[in-house]
Image (cartoon, rainbow, N blue to C red):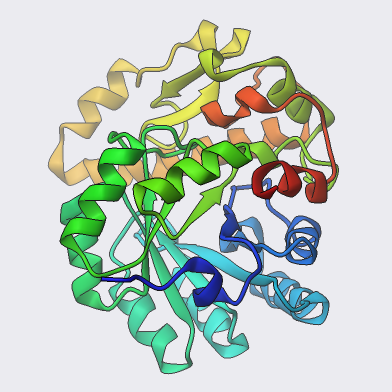
Amino acid sequence: MEKQSLTSLLQITHPVIMAPMFLVSNTKMVIEGMKSGIAGCIPALNYRTLEELRASIHELKAAKVPGGSFGYNLIVNKSNVKYKEQLRILCEERVDFILTSLGSPEETIREAHKVGIKVFCDVTDLAFAKKVESLGADALIAVNNQAGGHRGNIDPETLIKQLNENTKLPVISAGGVSKKSDLDTMLSYGAVGVSVGSPFIASNEAGVSQEYKQACVDYGAKDIVMTERISGTPCTVINTPYVQKVGTKQSWIETVLNKNKSLKKWVKMIRFYIGMKATEKAATQVTYKTVWVAGPSIENTTAILPIKDIVKKIVS
């Protein structure tokens, strides 16, 4: 069955979403992405207040051009205490699309569809893909084992083909794309488009420190490791001297507490909060405690460039 293309789903020129990146993504990046004919997505959690979130939507609406599109990422589990209010704002303002992560998207799909907003859901395997399909998702973000941040465990080709053969939803591949040949490869596997994050960290418009951007130039795929020490869930980071010093496994006390069913939820919430604060500090300040989130697709990042030039590397 022919599946709707990403360009058709979002009315964009190129089948690319600039992936939502905690603390990295901002309106400047998305505006430049839209001008270049792609979609951009920002984590709602990048905004401390609902007023700031609403203001960012107004800014993107005012800057939107034909061939571009914008959306927001919602963390839909209990760790995000702002979730319901963020969803309300996104629906009131009628953003182009919502991308859900780390939880059940049932409420998001129901409320977003009432006002004509498309919902794409992060999935890492077929079981969850079939669940979100049954809930009415519009497309799948297939997070593979080459993605940055909270990545999956399945290689891109296997995951894309599994989802295509067993669901009716369009599959958008997330992970492992930094240049045109990567995009072509994912499309050849059956993806209708791609979600690209890490290559955009080293951009002029990214709101992170120059040192973070330069690290994405200086380090490569071989320098990416998985750590459990940020959010409690394995996450990819650059293997800096500080990461090497503190290690990538949970502390013994976290391991013990995580085995206690009554405490596990609270431990995860506290770990998530502490980890996000540490990541925020690392993204904007340079200290010896540096933890930079990135994926192996920084391998082809050779300079800090404008967004428009990074898009060109991917689409032409």
